[in-house]
Image (cartoon, helix red, strand yellow):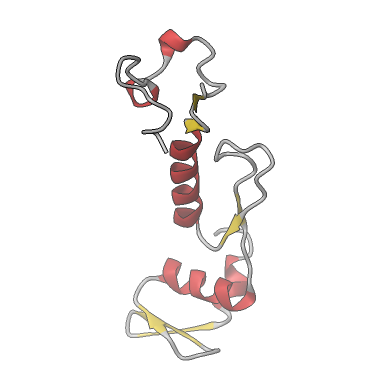
Length: 115
């Protein structure tokens, strides 16, 4: 069981395949979403970015793992082209090794169009 999860389950009642919040009465058929709901009440954000989004100083925290994954995915995409410059991720120091998703066609690249 996830660290701290059993404590959060104390805030839920389970009846007929549904989890109900003892604080507000909201119910959810999925345990993971009900636990995420309790985390919102308690402002408990155990999922840390720690720079996975491409910003080494990012200290954002999230209620559930899918929120963290969405943050990383959108920030990584946005950090590829900034301020009219193509930034090469550290994982691909050789520009020839870049996956096609990171490559910008040189003949059609215009800093004004990338914003």
